[in-house]
Image 1 (tube, rainbow, N blue to C red):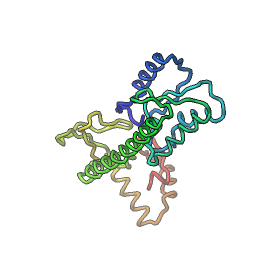
Image 2 (image 1 turned 180 degrees about the horizontal axis):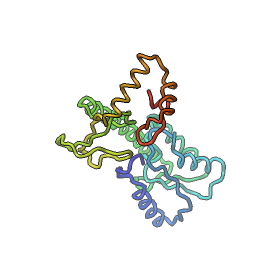
Image 3 (image 1 turned 60 degrees about the vertical axis):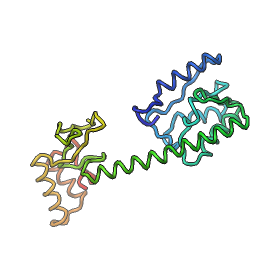
Image 4 (image 1 turned 120 degrees about the vertical axis):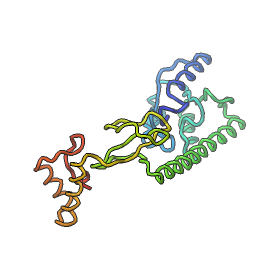
Length: 236
């Protein structure tokens, strides 16, 4: 799963798989999971990588793999990718069974057609979702709201409610709790604003390098936000 808010939570998947295993007489001996990982790529999917490695290298201690549905391999843009991973398992003598699908993965023509349709649907779902999210971010950015990312020195994150009324300043690591809330970047303390102007002057007027400025600020003991030391990237 890619977020905590998805209906395909790990707990829900585990419960459905456990119930399926009990009905079919399976004993679950190993669980592979990828929490908080996107299904668009295998990059970062350590659980899936380990599963495939155990199957291909013969390190497996199981005869079947129970998956909630076809999309749990991933919502890959290339639908052949998830088919390839399933093939690797079957080729190694490990059956793949889908606990939440309305068909048996028995190698029949019907199951092959349905699986391919499901893979295409999963890929299209991700494409449409990505487009919707991009449009939403663009619209919010045009309205002046922060879309995440590192907070520059000299500014703070102000939390606004759905009516645009200020709630509070967010501290390090804090996030909005309501979907309707928005975050606006606002000027920070006067001493930080003055330091930004000083850094700008050192770089543009005095011709100092960013590395030189960071060394100078650290030697002077100038505090950075939240206890960070000054680096070239921080100065930039």
